[in-house]
Length: 75
Image (cartoon, rainbow, N blue to C red):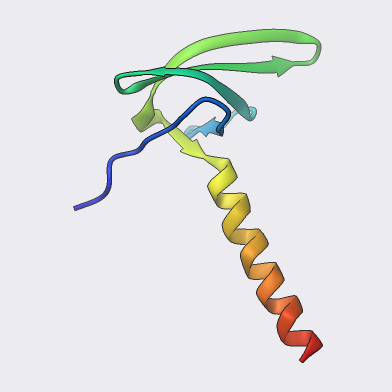
């Protein structure tokens, strides 16, 4: 069984269908209120957790992999 998605204010997310990075400003139940820029215009919307992916988590795992590879090269 997969762990349910959880987000909190400050997370950087993206719609699973694609689109710009968005910042979660607030959460309520299973929805996230997000804001993002398109050029100089600030946009906002509310999205179900199931429609979002946490791109911070993707970056963190990539950074960990790069650090491990770099550490291996130094040895």
